[in-house]
Length: 618
Image (cartoon, rainbow, N blue to C red):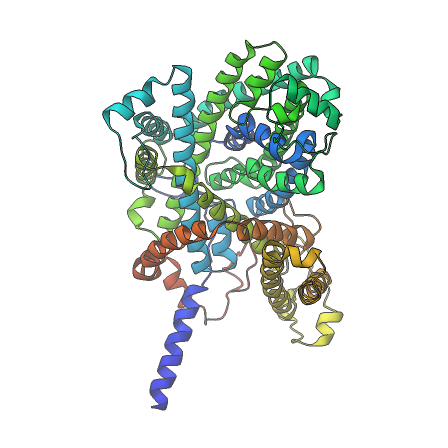
């Protein structure tokens, strides 16, 4: 009986160790390997075009108007500033990992290197869902915009010829959206260089149109629209025969107060989603350690300037409460008598949607390729075309799935699922930065005389917590890992308080308020204790500043945005994850490339043969 219990315990330990096994070897320079490989041909300009194109999509033509009218008024520029800052928190974490581990897979690879195989699979599987829905929804938006330009002929024909009255499906199949995805997929199959050219052309046109819109608005705009009083609102409403029940706030620059600005910032945050596709190009970029961090930061700054300028333009051109939710820019220019500008805006919107569609589809096969190459998905998906140097099978399969989704499904109810994949990946990347920054260095840095800090382990004690070693040790790393785990748990609790108990907190309900303050104080103490622990001095081309503050704030914002998602969204997500778990436990766990490597984990570490770039304490 005792032997059976011991065997059961060993089996459980072995099973758990498989879930947390980490990737040992970084992707090597594929140009030096035999056989087909991904082509290293992308430059910083290519990456910036890809990042801006995927981020600065249709939202810049629609989102700003909706948020300004219903949530913020002219203060939408403040909301976009807050959203940009929170996005940069995630962006700098991606940038540091781009310098550390420039490989295909983005957040999936980063998670595999730090928090283990199971969470890496969860990250990759959710990213696949996010990119599929993103590409399909953008394709349907492209089709709808084009159909609107030609008078709705495509929609009328489809509704007459092939009506669909099935719950969950679209009212009619969208042939054009599916065709657009297949065309973009064909471009991606031909080669990454050709895809980069297409991306640069459409992104350049989009940015040029937005620049013309912003300059024109400053010519025709009126600062009085930022200083409207309640009497002005009443008079304008009567002039345009608007129902007085329309809520327009109290006027001025902040008509909806601080609450409106924060609510608008939460919505505006999603306008900056998309830059992470840059991180999936690690094996196709020249000098990725330098190019990826630079491209991420530059892309976010360009997108912020564009969103800031367009939102200011809208609220200068016309009173915020008159803005049209569906087509704010054409309505605004029509208001000032420049109706002909709508044609320029239509061209810019189509270019924005095209570059956004390319940016949505481009990273999807890279995620699939990375997971298949590691054995977590079917390995034939990792085959590289010897002619085009692209993950051909992964690209074709991804395009077909996206085309089917766009062809059949009503994606409006599924769009929130994109948020879970994106926000989860942002959180795990920030978490990975925290873990790695406090890891002990396993090898001596070339050209330095730093001691091997891993050799001086002073044990877990209060002395280590209060007076740590000047270099990271195993003990200090364990302390940080424990504190990070507590911070993550505390963040979830605080976000639940803010989401579901905010009324009790702000009404000073004694029990809820006391509990909230207690968890908040423990949260602050944990961050301070992490701050005092020694960090790795490993030289990188880019490092996140103010660690641990920036990564923790990123985790907090992302977790809060995930917590406020609806229960229906989480149910849909659970179904998708159940499919993923079936694949992982019955295929991926058994075929993982790290399975054979993990069996050697108990052997002594060979300092002469290991060149662990990430200095992971395996």
